[in-house]
Picture 1 (cartoon, rainbow, N blue to C red):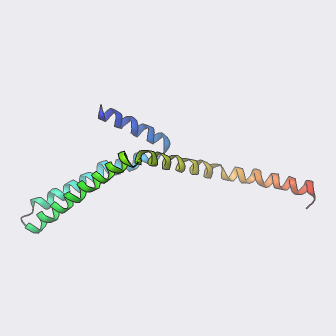
Picture 2 (picture 1 turned 135 degrees about the vertical axis):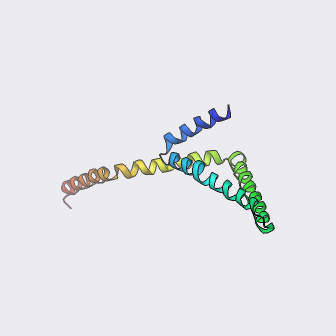
Picture 3 (picture 1 turned 180 degrees about the horizontal axis):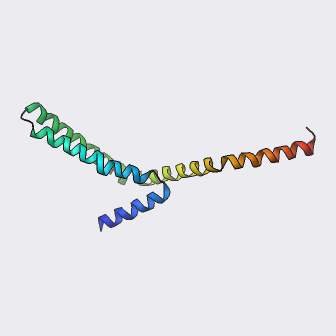
Length: 118
C-alpha cells in the first residue's frame, strides 16, 4: 500500500510542477546511492578515524531524515510544499502569457490616450 500511495502522490505533484520528475530521478538514482556508497566505503577502511566519521555521518543522515519527517507530518510540510508548487505554477503561467498581456495593455492605454486626447 505504501508504494502505491507514494506513486499516486508523485503523480499528483508532477501535475503541479514539471520539475518534480528530474529532482526525483537525481535524488533517488544518484544522490542516495552515492551517499550510501560513500558511507559504506568509510566503514570498510581499516582506520578508526574513517569508522568514526562514518558513524557521525550516519547519525547526521538519521537526524536529517527525522527532521524531515517531523516537518512533513507535524509542521504541515506537505501543505507548504504543495502551496509552493502552486505558487511556482502560477508564476510560470503568468510569465508565459506576459507578452500577450503587455500588448493588450499597450493597446488599451493607446485607446485611452486617443479618447482623452493626452
